[in-house]
Length: 367
Ligand code: NAD
Image 1 (cartoon, rainbow, N blue to C red):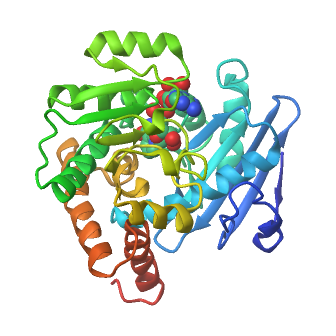
Image 2: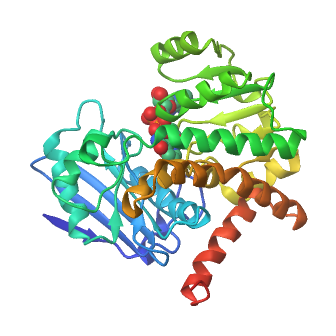
């Protein structure tokens, strides 16, 4: 087993896609390669000031290794801010496995991946993300203790997605309160893009609260199944960004708010689960602000899952997990106000609050 380390200073050549410094400040990037199992993975450790770097593992059919690297760097950086803003004693990290989760994920591959995680001696703690399930984490648990999000049967906290969805729901309600003056979503038109593990539970909360929900997904079968199950509309137009809705909830993959889509968006609020929704945080955050669209920062409102996973490490009860997740509502309101008071974007506001906690801890001010 070998793990090649690439220095952060060598990575600045890699962000041709989004033109932002997503590599910036990474402490360590580990390339994992195993011919026998076909494992090709990258572990990004962005920052460990607040604690070990915790973030899920994504398995995705990236077209090349640069694309995978770009993704893991953006995701691990986001985890530093997510964990900080949520008040968790965790740093930011993330892993990606290159391959098709449906056809290439084997127990042997997951075991080998777990051995790579173990070789980092707890500096990185893994969990599930897109393409992973609790049963995969159970396999990883057999070879390393540096894993969370394992099944309830094995003593873990189980699938984090329902808690993530609940956090997104309360974050969306806070955004509605700030933008519309009421957090009652009854009658509000919401478009949910991506109805996987998180998206489906979000649709459930939204329909229960009387919102008029439209769903879209690249998986047609799933769209029809979820549409019928919750009585949601199915999006059929040519351009979902220009759909006549009050709230757009990106719950698929990241960077859906980009140069090609941003000028079409009609929604007044963007609040969803996907990580790294803004292709370029500075540019697209500013355009949203200018257009008067309230953006609920992704790394704030999708933190329910990591709060749930963290409960395994600190023995929080279910009530404590839900209470911490509900607090996303208050933090969101605080961020929206801070952004307005300082004439900055909501992303900048969330980022600066998260960074302050990291800096204060580094400087010994958070005793
Ligand atoms: P998932 O894989 O279960 O679901 C993703 C869904 O999006 C799938 O149904 C897929 O078909 C669909 N999809 C992919 N590309 C699409 C596109 N271009 N247009 C429309 N649909 C598309 O993943 P998930 O666990 O539900 O996570 C969703 C998002 O939320 C991801 O970005 C993930 O990183 C983020 N997130 C998840 C959690 C969690 O607890 N699962 C926590 C934090 C953040």
